[in-house]
Image (cartoon, rainbow, N blue to C red):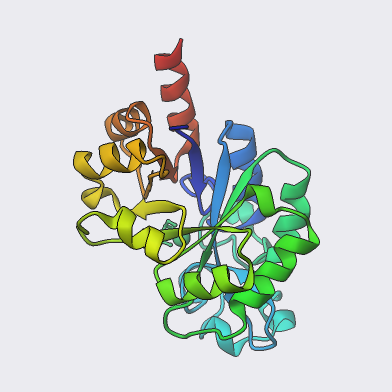
Length: 243
Ligand code: G3P
Ligand code: MG
């Protein structure tokens, strides 16, 4: 299997997560793709942010779902990380799509759609993927597997991937059952049996979040893709053992 490196929330070790500078840095690191998290604002605009509230990663407070797009744009999403990023905004998914279209990067959109459940999220995200003709480069994942089934119903052409944190037995059968093409396990449950059998079935395994150099090496060598906050290190490890 192809062992790809995805920058988790962009290059989030060195840049404020889920922002344009973090995505640009991921491109420059030599990563193969980026991962980002999407929710809807009060006026139903897909925006790129991980937490349910803006408290940790901006200078504001409150739930993302209670902000209009215009209001969320006024928040500073850079200073919490480092003052050199002052004034950086929460990007809309549209803004990221416009940018990524001109790169070679793959895009893993994680639908943050558990609680609260955004009923229009799948539809809005799919519309953007189609608008930018990014179908071949996008992977949609979620911890809410009902959302993955809904995605597949609305857009059978898109790849969906099962995110999970438990030690599931033979999850490839389950993935197939819900129409998903890949497994995205949490690092502690990405056991060798799972990796070997999934790979033999041509089902990609992409593990999150892998920041230790030794684990990066082992997983990439085993043919897994990884999500990492530190794509620069992962890229240099892959380069070294390939040479
Ligand atoms: O998509 C992989 C990973 O991002 C899932 O967990 O909490 O970092 O979004 P989280
Ligand atoms: Mg995520």
